[in-house]
Image (cartoon, rainbow, N blue to C red; front, side):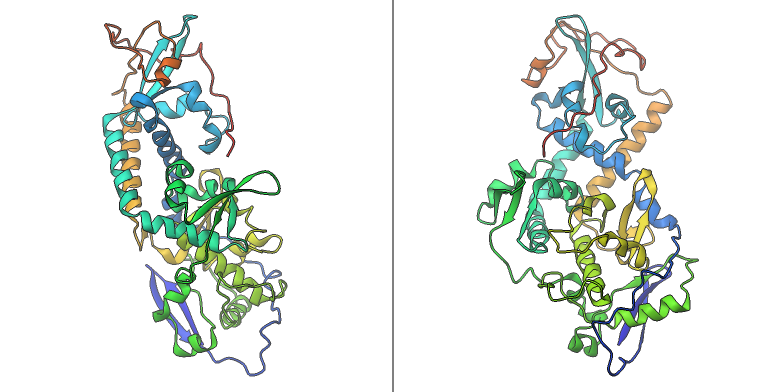
Length: 426
């Protein structure tokens, strides 16, 4: 029996151990009572740093790109705040103003003479967004396969749209995938009303060619004996300084020898109290993280997958119990789970083309934030007596001799504070 470990900078080494005669696959060794410490991984934390702001900014870019003239008043953008994941005490306008390389600010006077701040995309941001659309088109088959495999992980091949929305950034799906993507593939997907009146997305047919997990594909890391006995072992790696006690190492050796249950197979026959069942749960999330383009997601994004994936109560505890497979980053006041094997320090090993686009957006954001902190950006206000609703209909504020520039500070729009959290229905 082989065990694979990641050591140092992603290097893999392994060792073999024979299977004990008479070993009961259904017996439970139980790691619940074994205390495993959390050790900070600076390299993986660096991967997570800035992710929250990047996701929010990219979502705002998608929203603005669908508006006429790529410009919307702040109260219109605020309707999407619930989907941005920003801190509740952070005004949306404050967040947008941090990144003048992506968002340009203007304003109009409404009929009551109130300043209404409006935001539009800069030319550089708009060009990069168009590049992103090209990457999505070029990788459409891959994105559709990821969505199909996600639905195939569930027992009924159906998930609420709310659940998919939480994962769409990680899966690489377009922001408006329901309107722009699903109708194109009506032969694969259909919208259904669930018993609780929510809307769900269903995969209409099973595809055996997709029902192969990433661990099963990586047969080069398994021995013939592993494959014959279906005892596939997960790649393991620990943060430097992580001291695994002998009792834990003994459990891990035994656990790696247990049979592997494909996440696409029916597992209803497994006793949820056993380590065989726990290995199946780890396998489900190992596959789920491989479906994401950066092999990570926030812990809360999977919290409502228990019933669709046929998981037991407190199933996310496997992330703590298997720190050699998953790393929990606590950056940005949230918990993000990362698949360790996918990274060599801060570098993701299998790089999706969308990652390059996101890194360029992140670079633009850093530059804009630095330049604004140095006072290199001043807000430009386009003053005019116009109804801000007309901006949404395609009439941008300013123009017609109304484009005088005035310097302003952060209190300029204090009369119009409409950054309330408005949650749109999923």
